[in-house]
Amino acid sequence: MIARPSTSLSAPIAAALLLALCAPAAAQVEAPLETHPEIDTRGLIYGKVLTTRGETYEGRLRWDGEESFWGDFFNGTKDELPFFDRIPDEQQRRSRPIRVFGITVGSRWERISDRRSTMARFGDVAAIEPRRSDNVVLHMKGGDRIELDGGSNDIGADVEIWDRQRGEVTVPWHRVERIELGPAPSDLPVEAYRLKGKVTSTAGTFEGFIEWDNDERLSDEILDGDDPDGKRHKIPMGDIRLIERHSRSSARVVMKDGTELVLDDTNDVDAGNRGIVIEDPRYGRVELSWSAFVRLELSDERSCGPPYQDFEPGTHLRGTVTTRGKQLRGRLVYDVDESETWEFLNGEHDDGIEFDVPFALIRSITPIRDAASRVELISGASLELSGTTDVGGDNAGVLVIAGGEAGTTTYVPWDDVDRIDFEH
Image: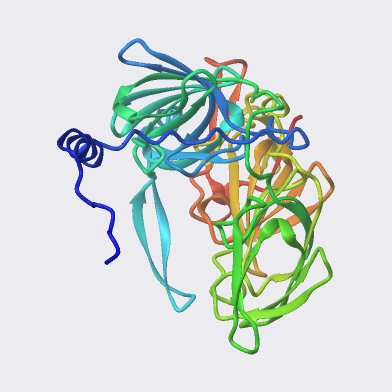
């Protein structure tokens, strides 16, 4: 008979083992992000977060898992337009056509709205002050102060900070006293870089930082799709050299190692694509539909976008409005709303391309029919835009303020505008 070793445990050992098994697990500490010296991180949103409890955090910032870069937009609604009361009372109502299938069948009187959606690039903002869960004041670099009431999930969002001393911290909106923005260092720890490249469209080419499918914009994010054999491929965007529309329902993908695939069956690579966004310094923000997209050629540049210093402080819009043979020169308030160079004109091109153009890039605007305008840019480019209030017949008109802030104000209804020339 072979003697077997005893499996019984002494009481002290058993008690120790039981305590070890029942003890709570140690808190998991996230490993710090790796620093990649070859990636320029100055394009990341950076600043100090001051809390209602007297704490101060400093580091890279992100809004509720979304906005991370200086070119990203902070969105909201202006509940009151500061220049609205300069419209004469008798002109605050106007007659607008009623159309059925594009045919005018009558008209109606309506009051000009004193609420507007607005967006500001984080790079144009100096400080952010939450007031309530749905209210915030933006202090712009140029000294302008904008109060926003709701209208987006940017207001009320949690703010994430990568503090170099304390690690990753999330501060709820109601505990944020003030956020002071400033230049980011070039060597922050990051795991990936922003996508950049040249996009060929049905209306020409655009170059700049890229957001694919209104989602993927980092080198470690994934493009997926099925090949003709039904095999699903998941490809890091940083491994891709070229994406080309192959058909309405597929795309040709060429990787940096030379591998070529035709992929379909996901919205990354077919008509379900939610938009290809390009931050082109000549135009501002450009978004293509799948039907307007032809090809994307990705570059090897490794950065996180333009730094805070590249966003120059905004100034008042100034220029000349030509109306019925007269010229009125002074400070301009466009659509009785936009009054600063950091603000945006929005419009759509016939080819399924949307433009958000900073007024700092606009040389002139000429209404060419009831629903469209020709926009000349300082780069020499010319855009025919329609589909929005900014460039169509629903525009609220232009205020021209001559002789300083308290000077004479002339209101020009949009129907009377022949041309607007901006001074830069």
